[in-house]
Image (cartoon, rainbow, N blue to C red; front, side, top):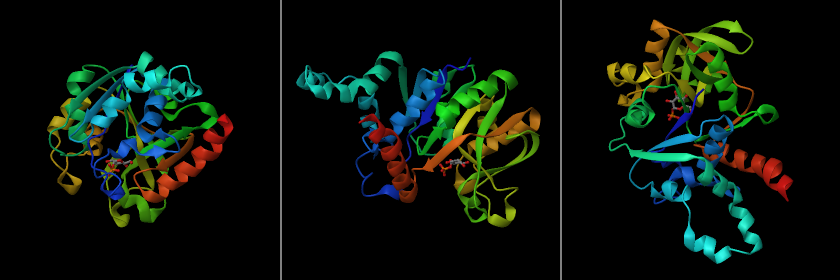
Length: 277
Ligand code: G1P
């Protein structure tokens, strides 16, 4: 059983300036809920109710969001507005949140390594909140991956086919097909040029990692963009053992880009917000 989920949330969100000048990008609302809350709900739906944030400077709003606001609750107690807080209250009551800080932005691999003391020696999920994922038939993407983990007991990355001229934005895998939608990883390249990409199967921000990943990250020198890349560390696992790449069932919105964010907003407005009225 996987119990823990790590959220690296120290990044700056420069693509959303000026909105993210003094506000964490993870707190941008998709309709009426911050991006990060969608991610936490997804993890919890998969049974991962220990949530660890690797935060950085200027990210306190995230910790405050997942805490009680006594003044606000006192103000709206007994009014119809109480229902707006039901979802977040239930997360606060049922999830164990922990926080640690990444002091220097040295890459996603480094961010994940920073979470090691709070994860310990067990397999864990990683959610990049920028990628908003809606699982098919109400089964969250992390839940689909946790099921696979039970069967295969190794690290798993979520993948999606992307157009060839977008591969440079992602970690890209090569793999041997094991069954429909599942590959055994043979290669992985972070942010390859179109001509160097081993396929058009891009990693999206959902991972399940076995705890030997921490040693692998320690052994990994800085790679693309001069950063310690999780992709490079996972490739080390794949070379020594087994790593799976899973074509998840559902939709994913790249909320790190303005276009993806607007698409997510329109989708969530139609499918969730309107339905709830
Ligand atoms: C990160 C990962 C990359 C992955 C992407 C998914 O990149 O390094 O392998 O494909 O997330 O969103 P970033 O978007 O942080 O540059």
